[in-house]
Length: 399
Image (cartoon, rainbow, N blue to C red; front, side):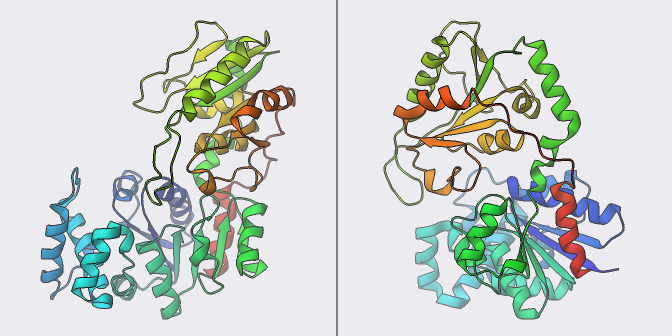
């Protein structure tokens, strides 16, 4: 049976990988292993899938790298897996040092932290030990990108799964020799990558497996039931997921507007109160204190105890700056309005990629609400294969 090696970081990246790896394994299509980087490991472990980590590939001669790893770990807080962090940082820094020399490696790490890493040498070692027939990565840089480079050099076919729009990652995913196939969210992302230099047959619209649960028919049914229970039929129901805007972009230093989310919510609340048939749902992020809201039975705090997928099927329209909840609302059939002005806007061009129905400055929010809340919800996704099934179809080309 063919061997498939997945390499992924945590958060949304591992959530893309787990359903695909689990389906491959359950159906006996391939033997799978997941090289789970940093925070991805607990998710893979909880899913009961075969787990690999950097520390599994330590070999004689790595003692200096591990000592350096211990030095780097000592500079961090909240390390959950000490042995793995020492191996990950130590081996990655050793690769950087082998490429640039110690002084320049130290300077790059001081300037960029882990963003300086591209541990091709270590990933080459891992591929030589695991000997996969197919490599699957997501669009993360560092070790995932290094794995794809190493696989290309070794003649191992590769597939890259892109979670959102590849705005930054196009610098490497746009190269025609970076993996044999790229799985993307929608046609607009496909066009973007083809325009960057990928051959059309290399880029396949599959959707994102992490979002499959959103479009499950049972979830949609529960959303309709929630709408009825809340007495929202005949109302225009708008969702605002709260967001935080920094004063300065954490990576490029460009100035932000920390008050923008507060002003946007204020505009939403005032618009709602002026519309007798409107309801505003405000959903704070996990662990966040609820914002101050006007006292009205048509402004509803929908906290974390409200299941998000059902809520997204119950509302008509979502409004966001750059929250991925907006994308999820779109996938569930809600209309989406993006308020422009976020410091992160360039990484989430929701209208450009066919996600937002409108992208407007704050001054244009009320007219956009007038227009789009009167439009019916879009038809939900047609009954077809899930994103997981479509990705499996791509992988089986190589198995």
